[in-house]
Image (tube, rainbow, N blue to C red; front, side, top):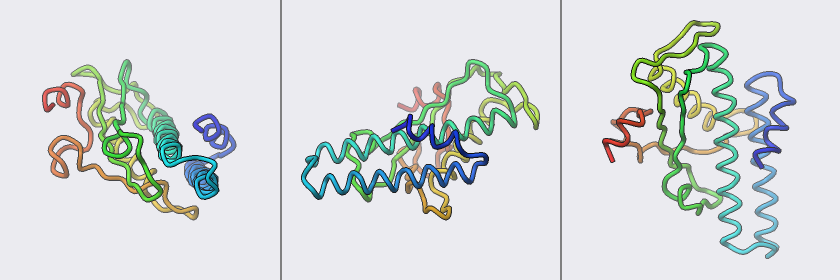
Length: 176
């Protein structure tokens, strides 16, 4: 699925067309999975796994779009990593047709790390990854002419709604 999404993205010129292409792909896959489900070609467990695979691929594709945009504007964070952790039904690979995605964002970068600078100059790593998280949420859930990709629930992150959107690996580790 991710390969097919990346192929669709490679044919798009701007962010909006990329987001629409991802939403179109998801809708087509929902129909494919649903028809196989209704027709008895796949059982419940396979249906849940395919819906979970679709969500995983969608999050990765949107993260790739997000990072490409932010790397262009601010440069990459050397040796930095950003991880999306799926919790709830996503983490258990039990997504159904109406599931939202329970997500947690964690980054790993040196204490004094900053991005390499791009069109808009460098950013401290934490600020860079907060922007990654904000854009990722927006790109996953913002409506376009093709609809939304997913509803997102961020309440499983450390300290729930009142906690920071993005946690450093060290803070996440200490919390848990």
